[in-house]
Image 1 (cartoon, rainbow, N blue to C red):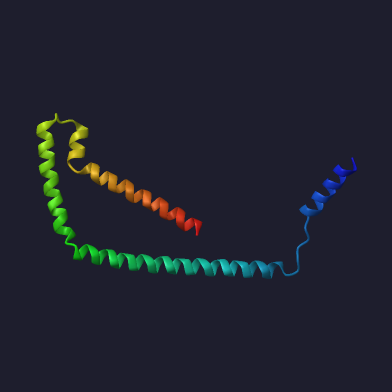
Image 2 (image 1 turned 90 degrees about the horizontal axis):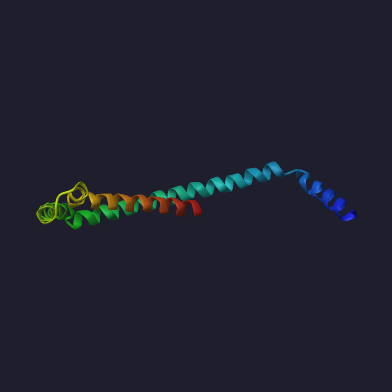
Length: 124
């Protein structure tokens, strides 16, 4: 019986911990360090995003992406016409043969990468 009383009294003592004299100053120092860390992270992420955007844009311009997209659109039209001749036309086949399936897959991939990036940033 004495052990249960002792444990309850000990739990009450730990639950009612006294506040230290410098608790407010300590909390302000910790908040300052946390805010400084977030500011630095924001700047680093912004700079990395800007550098990546500039590099990506220069790569797109240098690789003639616009002419390749035009060629891909023409190829998609030829492919969709060929599929339309071979198989009976249904809503799903016509939607996928028109290139929409590709764009849906690209959109889902971009969305997934956004979720992954958000999770990584949250873990940092």
